[in-house]
Length: 212
Image (cartoon, rainbow, N blue to C red; front, side, top):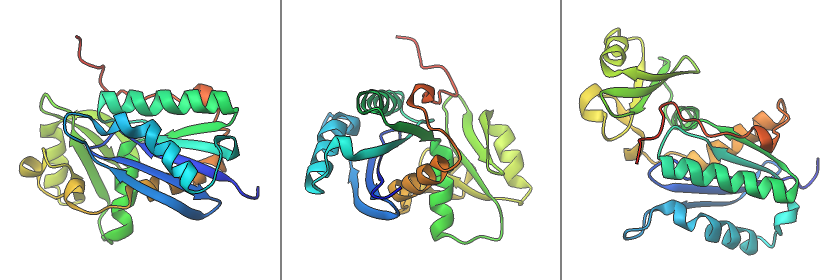
C-alpha cells in the first residue's frame, strides 16, 4: 500500500515517545518529558496535532495507529489506549499495541549486541517484577524468582532505575534507546500478520490498578 502513514505513541514509560512513519521512513520522532506537575501524557493530543501539522498530514491520511499497551504507568496506559481507540474509531482505521517489555527489549538489542538472551525485568512493586524472557511475557513475578534466573548466568539483564540496585544489569532509563522507532517498526511488522482491529485493542494490566 503506497503512502501508508503510521502514527505510534507511548505514554506508558517515564517519557512520552511519538513517531510518525510513512511506509518505511520515519518522518518525525518526538520525546516529551514531564513538565512541572504535569505528567507527559497530558501533552499527547497537542503533540499529535503538532506532528501532523508539521508534516502537512491530516488525520484522515493515517492508515494505522500503534501504541504501547503496558505494563507501565496506569495513567499512561489509559491515555495511550483511549486515545488510540477513539482516533481509530473516528477515522475508521486500524490500531494495535505492543507491550513495553517487548519494545524495550528489542530497542536494547538494536544497540547492544550480546551473546546471551535478554532477561527484561521492570519494577512491579510489592517485591515483584514484570518479566520478559525468551520473547515471552511471564507476568508479574516475585523478585526472588527473577534473581534465581539471573544467578544462572544464562541471561543479560535489562531493567529500570528502581530495580537496578537490586538485580543489577543495565537500566533502560540510563541508555538512549530508540524506543519510539522500535515501537513503529514492531507495529509495522505486526500489521502484516494481524488484522489490527481497534476493537481488540486493550491495555495490558498485568496487575489490577490500585483501589482509590
